Structures are given as structure tokens and as C-alpha cells.
Image 1 (cartoon, one colour):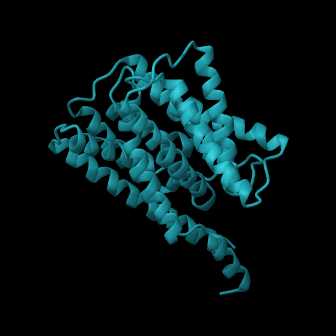
Image 2 (image 1 turned 30 degrees about the horizontal axis):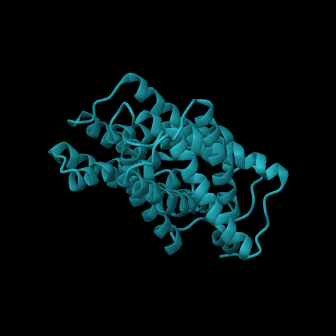
Image 3 (image 1 turned 180 degrees about the horizontal axis):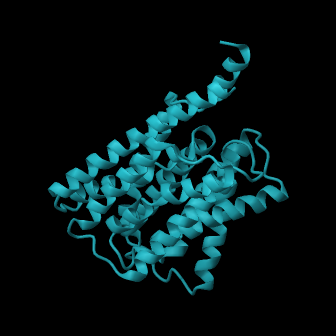
Length: 308
């Protein structure tokens, strides 16, 4: 093996312990956020809940980073953070909160499971690197799994909410792809900037839409909001943005194929919702889908190494 080949291999994304930990964190935490969002919506408006959630997470992370002598984003980087944060936190997460007022959390997770499809198409257009055969198998199998969830009972919802969820998935995909090509701050300051800028935009959108918090949210909503801030925003969002810099987008977005199963299983555990044969088959399908996507990523890495 030549020095050049060794250097090329060392720069390739691998399933390091950090990457695996980030994947598991995103899989489990974001699978549970649909349930948490549902709890908050009883006494909190959707956009203000979403905006303040990310603002709180961004402030905590930014203060921590500034104390460790990280630099604030430049003016151009703030604009890029606003674009990415607006798409991912406003267009997607805010869209999920709006949609869950008319559709179930399970159906919302099913709609967001289309993210790998939109991301793969957008990434292919941007980089001309289309998913390989195994990755296509994984995406297809994962979508088959979420279709099984949709066919299972209890996932009914309105057409408007379903349309909002698909638009939210497209918005998240576009933000994910753009984040890999725009000038953003290095490391976690990028995540803090995106949460601060995105949270501000979503909060302003809520105020302009007439949302107000007229009464103190109930205890369940406050606990759920706190969970979304600490785990959904600080932990999982930071882990996801790290994955976008460390692995292929098909790997980073593979969480969307797992979160529907996690959302349904948590519903069965916490809310005593039934788990049918279709649910079990769906869970098996999405887990196998992730395996295909991971194997497809390995093939890309081997080919990239050989090309160098």
C-alpha cells in the first residue's frame, strides 16, 4: 500500500466508536421526540415551542463553547447558519410540530422516513455521486418498513398534515445537503449557530403567525420541552451534524428509517398502544435497511481508496 493510499484511507469515514455512538443517540433520541412533541402540543403552540427549544439549546452550547475560547461565527457564517437552521429546524422540526396537531406521531415519523430518498437525490445532483445498489436496497427496504407501519392501525391523519410532513422531510434534506457545501463555523460552534439562528427564525415565525403562550404549560409539557432541549436539540442534533461531516449522507440520514419503529415501540410501552405482526415486520425491515446502507457505505469507501 502506497503512502498516498494510506493517507486517502485515513481520511475516509469509518464506523468509529464515536460515529456508532452518534448513530445510536440519533436513532433512539429522535425516535422518542415525536412522543415528546405530542406531549408539549397540549398546552404549547407548535412554532414557539420549537423555536424556544432550539434557542435554549443553542444558548447553552454557545456559552459553553465561548468559555472554551471558541470563536463566534463570522457575518457570512451567521447567514449560512440561518439558512441551514431555518430549513432544518423551522421547515422540518417546526413542520413536524404543526403536522402533529392533525396527524398522529407515528404517521409523522413515517413521513420523515422519506428523508434518505430526498437527500440521496439532492446529494446526487450536487456531487454526481449517486447511491450504489446496496444503498438503494436499504432505502427501498426502509421505505417498505414504514409503509407497513402506515398500513398498521392507528396511524390515521388528514391530507393537510401529511402534506406538511412531506414538505418537512424535503426541507430537512435540503438543509442537510447545503450544510456540507456552505461556509459554516468549525466544529460544534456550527451546531450552536444553527440552533440560535434557526430557533430565532422559528420563534419569529410563530409570533408573526399569532402564536402566544397565554398560560403556563402543564407539568407534562414542561418536562417534555426540557427533554427536547437537552436530548433532542443539544445531544441528538449535535450528533447528527457531526455525522454529516464524518460519514456519507445516506448513513447520517439512516436514522429516519429507524425512528418510526422507535416511535411505535415507545407508544406501545408508554401509552399501551398495540404491537401487531405488521409492526414487528416493520421493525425488522428498517433494521435490515440500515445494515444494507452501512454495507453500501463500505463499498463506496473501498472504491474511493482504490481510486486514490
